[in-house]
Each structure stands twice: as structure tokens, then as C-alpha cells.
Length: 102
Image (cartoon, rainbow, N blue to C red; front, side, top):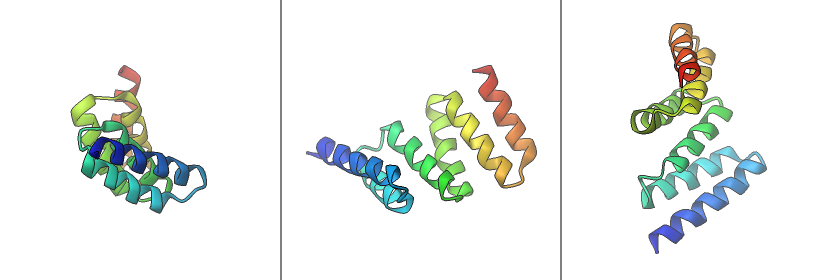
């Protein structure tokens, strides 16, 4: 049942994203993660929602967690973008460089 529940939350979150309701999507991705905590796609998607809401420090937390597990180049890029918007240019350059090397 928990697998179905996490998928339902994820699909609803995706619909919220498509209509620009990012805060609602964050809530559903968080619920999906509670029922399926190893699903990195939910973590990544929640990070994207935080980035779109300009909650860059929360996005950085999600992408850092994802990077620590999967070392994904896309996550380095988006985290770099968040650092860039936070004025952390040296960290942004480091992440952009890491994304280019993946």
C-alpha cells in the first residue's frame, strides 16, 4: 500500500507543478518521501519546486542529499544555480564545474 500511496502523492505533485502550485507539490513530494524515502526522484523533484519558489537554501539541502547518494550531474547544475542566486559564486562555480565533468 505504501508504494501506491507514494506514487499517488508523486503524480498529484506533478500535476501541481504543471499548474505552478509549487508549495502544494512540495507537500506531496514530502509525503511521498515519507512513504518511500529511498526514491531520489521525489527528492529531486521537491528540490526543483523549492528552486522555482526561490527557496534556494531548501533546494540546496535536497540537491546535496541527492548528490551524496547518486552524484548526479543535473543536481550539481541546479544546486550551482541555487548557489548563484544566493550570491555564493564560488560554490556555484564549483558545482557548475562538477556538472561539466560528469
